[in-house]
Image 1 (cartoon, one colour):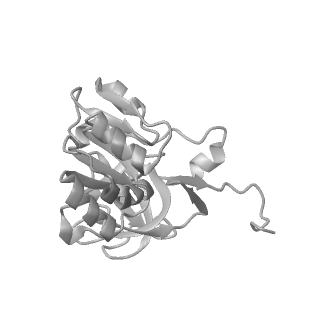
Image 2 (tube, rainbow, N blue to C red):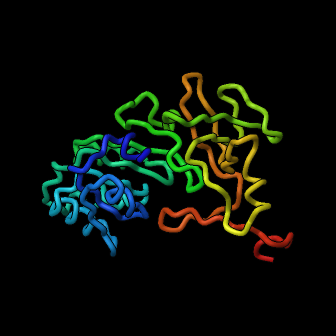
Length: 228
């Protein structure tokens, strides 16, 4: 419901699911189109054939889709909003998407534990390197190693407080407690806030593997270094 409100979605929308977002159209009574076997060509064909109006895609998918536009003579005029998640969207990909899709293009920052935390309209060009400002109901601050708030433009770990905070990791009570600080989730991401409150992502603090735009976290069970 938070995503539906953020992107003005309703029962008239046709939502293309190429990432784990199956529940969104069901919750709001919209039409859901599930792309079970992703390729950029199938994504483009599906979006045109079903007159898709909204989708959230990981940045690696959007890069492939943008590169495939030149070979796709299809009508994508029904698309109203596209949201990029996961890694940062490259400038040339953003330009290609804006030129071809002619719709609202956003990028968001979040995590499974907190859902969407920030949002940026990609047409807001003077802040294009950021991942946007905290959405309603979310508070973000940058912390030092002790969890203390840092000033604007200072890099540290991104802490986030939201009503959508997870209840904990399954059967990992210790890890769940370690992930929180006074009600804030410690994302393990490094970044900074500028003087206008826009968040800039710099990288990961925790060990992480990215596979197909999905973040896979390593929860070590021993002190033996990886690869040893």
